[in-house]
Image (cartoon, rainbow, N blue to C red; front, side, top):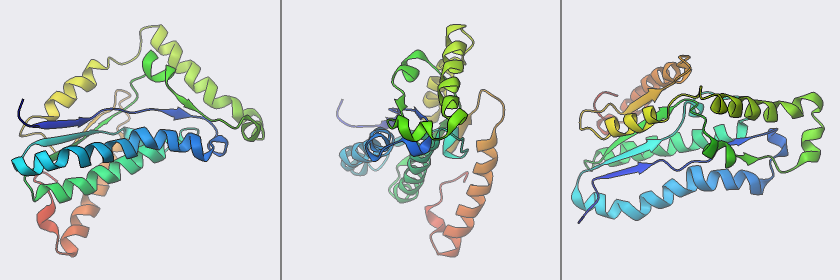
Length: 212
């Protein structure tokens, strides 16, 4: 089509288990998709976006980038890293005319996601936690049950939010938590205030996008 107008980082993989039971290799498998992959894609497409002097990059992170749950430590760490990466890219691209929008969906379980879940790969370490070792599997089973009963939130809502994020007047960050808890939104408000004060303090306030 002659160029790139929008880039959406939507690939992701989830993980659940006793955190100690994740080997470095299993941890790396999660970070490969959720962190290293988006960085590779950014480096591949940025020459075109920079040359165009515009466009929009949408990062689909997670409310878990702001909220930490036990048994989801590796996944949450990868999403927190992805969030930090997206934030840094946002400031650096703002001066080049490329917009960045971070989309934070809550839990939208699906069979596809659950079937590709990265599990802890050291059962001996997990067994040392006694009854706690069974909790991650119970969490996944409950999510599968929600999906099987047809009660899972409709993922179309996330797709619609990504489309909305492409609009020129989209805010820098958009959160969609079907649970209604909105803890990530509360953390975002504090982080935004801190980031605004930090960048202003070091003389980089001009890199803050409007609405931040």
